[in-house]
Image 1: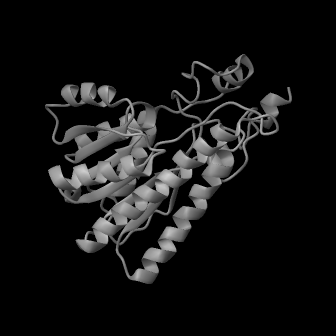
Image 2: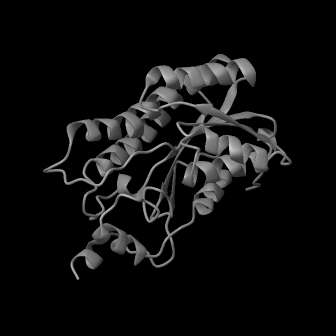
Image 3: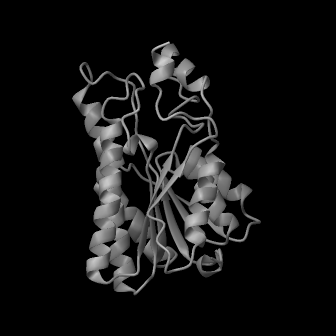
Length: 263
């Protein structure tokens, strides 16, 4: 199998949640490989800063300010992209939300935001991207940044509905694959499921408990660039290859956090 990013050079990609962490690393990697990347996030000033730092690269980074929990703002991001750069060829649904609360004591609005960003925003963005790709006969690629929590309920205190939202992403990936097959579409879809990654949702978070931080700091951990490399890999595969699920774990990671919680 020959791996190549050549067919994506000059093509347009949208990456949600691109202001930091995994999303930022993915956006940077796509720019390095020659894509025109629209980074969508509320903190667009962070993306604008990186766009200047990447100005000498093969591709280019653009910032679009949007709250991914609002459908109208997602639609605006796609319209701006279409009007200013052209048809989207790659969509990376990376934006995610996690708050530390017990399921038995949590806040309903916080849970709702988790589903809005982790599930509904992903569905809205995917719908819009597929519409554009099908209308313009584009053999595009949809990448969902999932989690190992989308395949097993990780015993990490305070995760509340997060795992449920990521299980939804696993189901939505397969649902989309089946729909695209039924439609006779050549659009590919991939779920990328990282283990523990350094990010503002994990060890860099400012508002997590000491217990949760210690559990994460005592474990093997990935860098955001590791996940970006995984995304570049799935995009690099030949058009007839469907990498349906890519799981990325650090060496030494066990299947759950149970052993450390119980000791």
